Image 1 (tube, one colour):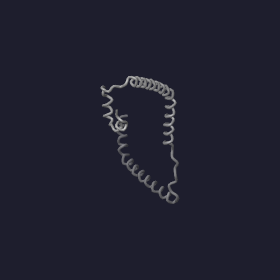
Image 2: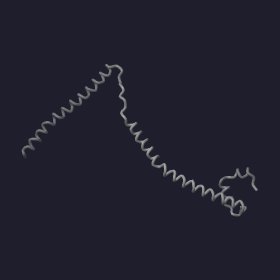
Image 3: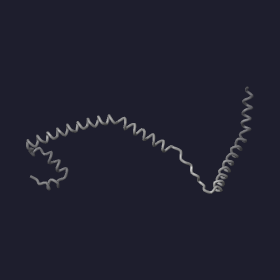
Length: 134
């Protein structure tokens, strides 16, 4: 018979090979006890599985509702408008920045008006051609 220290030194593959060896006789009493323990473990496992399934069905909808509320709340929190902070402490700096922005807007508007004025003769010519057919 092997000692515990020798058994602990064996690898998993060696232990599996020894367990699969059919020439090793297991005492009948030990075999009966192992089979009864295995049967009880299987029964307990099945009972625990059915219990967990019952609990899972009972708590599924409340858990789903909590998750949905958390997702919706998170979406509202992330999409809420942010507080506008004053970016300039000095009013003169703010005024200078506003002048820059207004100058840029004015420049873009001027370019747009120029394009519209250049397009005006083409629009008038097209309008005259369409009025001929009325």
